[in-house]
Length: 150
Image 1 (cartoon, one colour):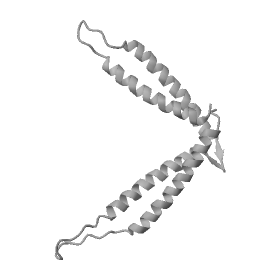
Image 2 (cartoon, one colour):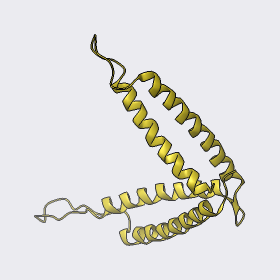
Image 3 (cartoon, helix red, strand yellow):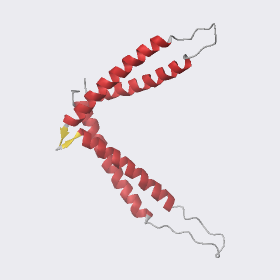
């Protein structure tokens, strides 16, 4: 099984677990003399099996990410770098958006609102970070589809 397939299965398991939790909640109580739409015992068995499979996949995915190295960098490090780039891009975009809202004055006596940063330069940095993110994502995806799950 390729790493990418395991990641897809992990995502499916997470969705399934969320649905099972919801179904368990819906069937946890009933009115007297009524029966639940689904047997909670069966749902618990299904939940336990899904969580056990998820735990196994997560362990194997993490081990594979740690052991997989590309150009001297582990897949785990690439993922951490990708996540930090996403955080940085988000913060820079917020800064650029806020700094761009200087507003207009209706009268000369109103207080002027000025940007404290060079929005054009911030946007250039955003573009560079986005390029680096795309390249990092491509490396990760390439590895995901070429590496066998340990």
